[in-house]
Length: 268
Ligand code: PLP
Image 1 (cartoon, rainbow, N blue to C red):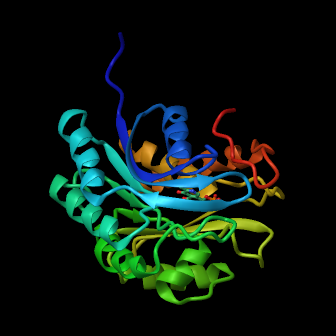
Image 2 (cartoon, rainbow, N blue to C red):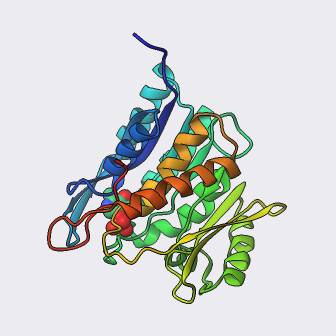
């Protein structure tokens, strides 16, 4: 027998192909040395080619999963992935609030504002964007949008680091403590810059851009690696730095699988 490990909770959807969603989160938690727990929000029908359907879990069951693990095992850090609907977002917001997760609170709470898959399949109902903006972002310790999600949340079309700074300001105005504007989808730069800001500190994390189509689950893996490091007690900038190093290795080691996009690999 050994010591009880730190725990991390993902509130997210299932990917039947095992590349993204809560499957990627659990793999990442394991690879980062924390015990992973799940509150399932939706079940997608998905393979390497795309998402062909999904069904939502009733909001009361989503809340009950979060409460069950929090009351017994404890949660050192939590993250959200696919939340699917406005009802699930509202329920998650009030549940995590009651448990003391979120900005300036005891348990770090990372919001990955998942809206669509890399193939453009929607993972969020149209009416849910406003709930994400007004109910969840103000509670986040850290929000981790890619540039498509920045456009949906702020209306800003960003394609360089100066634009990422403006986007961070616009997102901070919605209430999260920290914002990580991921630049992986910017086409103007040969390097990949992620910009982290809390309004006072602005940090740039730069890395190589890998030329691979196999990046399925990349966003989920970065957010869950950051969450795992927060669970271990790191502050936000150090957890982001560790998460960024982790995802770079995962993208470098990604593998082909199926006819479409293969996953990033947390096993190296
Ligand atoms: N499926 C689920 C359940 C997800 O949560 C996500 C991303 O968060 C995806 C698919 C999309 O992953 P990708 O954009 O890497 O294809």
